[in-house]
Length: 173
Image (cartoon, rainbow, N blue to C red):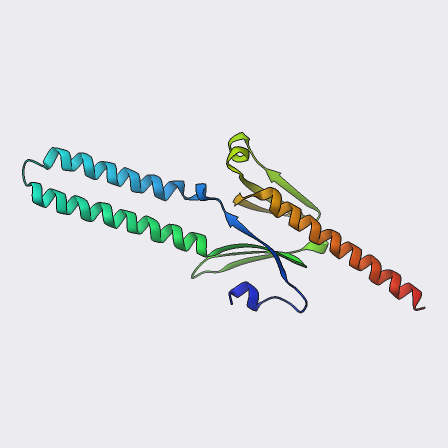
């Protein structure tokens, strides 16, 4: 059971879990590829001097860069959660320094998707949720249309429930 599950309120359930798009990791992947390329080029020019040492050092550098990239990507993805519950939207980030944003669905005024052409083709984008003067952006969210759909469905259910509760209170007078 994760942090979000332990901190749900009574009768609150998780409706949807948003995921980061793989493209968010282009920087660590690009750095890793640059290190591999630089290692291969350096190895090509120094191979004649000491081929065994060149291959060992080059292999170690490539292995360390791939492992480092994998660890960064894993922890970054593992420690970001975008959750839609029956009452709120919860965004949790961070490993050591945790940041938690909770947006009440009852106070949600607007929900926008920002997607360029390539973002639409690769099925990711930025979700912008406004509550009063506060504007919350969630970038590199995979399948933002599904995220918006689940938020809107939960808002509609809350409004219907509040309307029914209001009608039941009026009938009891």
